[in-house]
Amino acid sequence: MHQVLIIALFVVVFTRDTFGAPPLADALPAAWILTLSVAPIALLWLLLCAWVGRCARAMDRHGSVRAIRRAEDGAGVFRWAVFLTHAWNVFGLGTLDLVRGVIGDLVLADELAVLLVPIASIGAMHWAMYPIERRVREAVLFRRLDEGRPIHPFPERWRYTWAAFRQSVLFMGLPLLLIMGWGELSDAVLIAAGVDPEGGLGTLTQMAGVIGVLALSPPIMRRMWDTVPLGHGPLREHLHELCARHGVRVRSILVWRTGGSIVNAAVLGLLARLRYIILTDGLIELLEDREVEAVAAHEIGHVRRRHVLWLGIAALGSVLIVSAPVGLVAELLLMLTPLGTFGLTETLVSGGAMLVIFAGVIVLLGIVSRRFEWQADAFAAQHLSGMTRDRMDVTIQEDASATMASALDRVARLNGIDPGKFTWRHGSIRERQRRLMRLAGQDAGRLGADRQARLVKILSLVALGAGGVALAVEAALLP
Image (cartoon, rainbow, N blue to C red):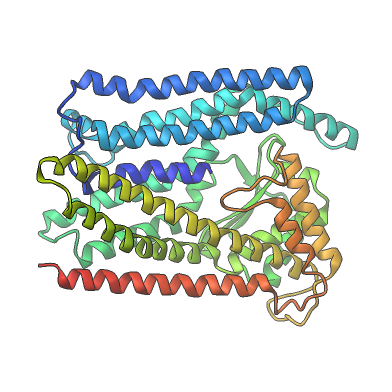
């Protein structure tokens, strides 16, 4: 959920100028506004530290596994409390307006100043969670010793915090920051040239910037993680052969050096020349070769099925399709508002509408993302059953489904994740395993996961088209 939180923090700042003046911006002194914007988050962090300490003691005294879940739940409450506080600071207290009054509306400078507190709080949350993470890793360490697997020392607290911050904040935050900076800079250039940034040219410029950042950022993103090229050997040759079998080109296959603390894989990049397959050292060390192949095939499936592109289409379509009814309700509420209270009501209604739109888009994108994960899992089973881009007439073998299901289970348990825990992007490991095992014996070219993914893509296009028509009609009717 870190990715959703980072997006939400940026959305609050990005949409500030679309709403009216914050109700308390002129009612309180600047010192009070700054205090009220920082003190609640500091208090929440102290409460989180106390809660995590209590959970850690429960683990030490009773070996309580529940304590891990309770600590994670506490961190989850802290994250969203930080978001709500940040939203109130921007829309209620007017912290962004206050900063702009001091330093001016400089490109990114004012936004960065306002984002500094919530983003730093995420790093502070990782610092607070260190005792739990250390105990979980120590438990895994004994299992690795029993299995004769490689072991690594758990990092010191500040190293752990910095690594977790890079992964949870910088990996998503840096592209968003570049997109926001491009938006501000392009608007300033268009205004200087006498062009309306709200018009068609401004929209095209913004879209070009988003696509450009997403396409060109992988070389930067790979440095957010400590990566090195995978050395020559059978594994590298096998993975390149896997890519060739499915017509997927990559620039390099990288190893993410985590000290064995993370067991995972990823693919970065829309363009072949800037695309990387990333495997963590823990994945290579702790999984069997065929399980590593299954996880890599899952990532190749994301590329082959163009999931990143379709997630972008689904995101834009979701925004458009959710915004239309919510915006209509908001307009009706404002029409019924007494004139004397219009300013405050406009802020509350606009802020509420933004939250509803954001929540709706997040729910829809979660549905889309989970179905793409199921399709990528199915792709791994298809690959292990002998499917290539030129050969679809294969039957899903039971051992292929079992291998991918086993890889998912090992990845979850080695990362200290409950296989039954539901997550926004991936659902639960157990649900994915059940779906994988049901694939055995089915025709690889006619899987339900592929049909569901196709339906999602069609609906995304429909939502995008309907939203575009709604915007065109609205623009035509406006005076």
